[in-house]
Figure (spheres, rainbow, N blue to C red):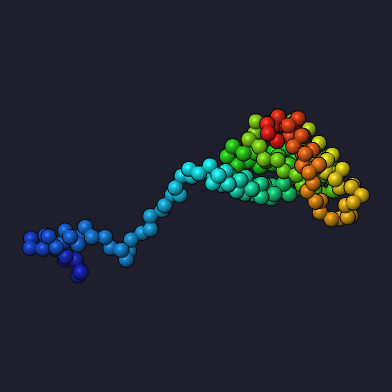
Length: 162
């Protein structure tokens, strides 16, 4: 018999059974917990917005690679550059280097996405050449630009409520 090994001699049955049944908290492994399901619609929508934002930020690296590889072809529309589960990311890079990303569910037609990017690029150029805009400054979001982007989404992508 090895040292430290115990044998059950018959008299310690109750004590040894109680020792085995009691948990040893000093060596207990943490159990993985799953987050509770989100039942609140506003929290679910907020979680979905965070996911969309994360997917778009993750696609920026793929956009840089795709833009570098397509620079020699001179093509602004880079098509689908990244995919996460059922979400797809399409990209467009203007000749000036402005990057535009579109997150969609993959069901949109490629020609509709191309048309959307061309309309948004046109609205972007109109906002950039505004005489009240300081040269080299970031574009200030305007209601007119936002309205043009939403109208382009309705026409080219068939987005309802945009």
